[in-house]
Length: 123
Image (tube, rainbow, N blue to C red):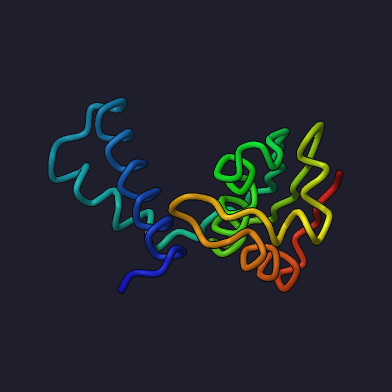
């Protein structure tokens, strides 16, 4: 099974190789070699600030910022989460335990991982 980090790494390399091949006008063999060159180069660690205003009225959208922030942190990036408006209520323990997004793990499980990774959350 492929974990998130390797999936994100491979998908980014494939996209960069395809983009470079299309924009620069490389031949097929050169474009095919591009993802291999990107694999050997060190990946740049990004600093990402994610913002959300979705609150408990839409549990799935409210959990996106946390799930996506966790995936980016797992990929090795520096992530910060900034909550505004209704989303500030997500910092209450009772609210976090009540949010069960559709197709995603409960927000309480995601928040445990966010805390374990020490991802800063501002509200």
